[in-house]
Length: 459
Image (cartoon, rainbow, N blue to C red; front, side, top):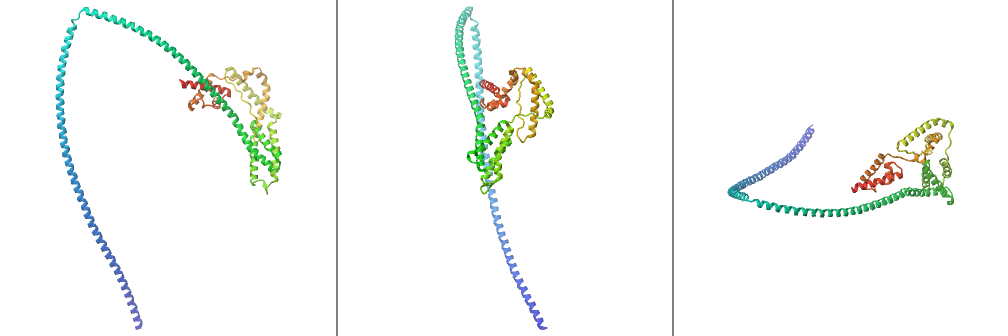
């Protein structure tokens, strides 16, 4: 029991010693912090004292500077006051001098005025003493001077008339020369315009041909290689591109079956290039059977489409003709009446060419409709042909334009030249597009517009 109490007392004593050691440690740390805080407060106090001394010194300097500034301002004000007093005294002296000079001038002017009045009085007295003989003598001298002046004036007028006549003759000669030069310049410009028009026409004619030849040659190479890939020898392989290209050209010229022709050309070249790259229709370096069949079917397809393009117009079923003939007859007769009225009144008459029915094989419905209309027009044309043949050919084909329309078209071309800045900037194609006339009529309008534009520029 005593042992347990002793042990408990030892434990309590050890805990108390540990707590005391801990408290001593914390007290030492707190003492260090207090000393540090005291040192920091002392440092800040010293810093505040130093800052107060520096601020006091700065304030003293600013006060001294202000005093110096005030002193300098006072000195400057005193100097300016002295200068102003000096300027005022000098101005007063100059004003007194000017006033004295003005008084002297006024006195001199008054004396001069008195002298002039005396001289005028003397002149009046001397003029009153002129006799009648002096007046007659002066009149005779004046008449002599007048006669001499008239004679001299007549000579001057005669000389001026001769000079003016010679100048007029010279001016007429120069005007004639200038007119001739202008005429030659216009002829030269006309020749240049004609040369440019011919060159433009040749370019317009040959550019599509060259482009078409280049495209045909380029696509023909792929079609030739496709024929060789399908197993045809080179001796006859060239017939495949020839057939395809002729078919395409005919389709473009006739404006029929264009889509099918171009699709065939594109497909042939695309299939060859894909097959040559091993991406389509080729297995183990050899073409597939269906590729051979497709290439072999190109020739019959071309024959079939050419047959559709070049075949003559066929008569449609009687039922179709009967259904469309009434509409076609009414339309043709109305057109005939309008044309007859326009010819009689002098208005412009133009006959549009008949459209080719059916542009492509894919346009089956449009082709059928156009062919029905064409059949109806042909049936109607037989009925009204006799009435049309009674008129001369020249009367039917002649185009008559009112003068107002011609001037308007020429004015439009002149405005286009003024906008573009020259006569050569407007080509024949532009004239055709602007006027909507044929090539020959548009060329005449263009030439007239160019002449009018040059006249406006020279004026």
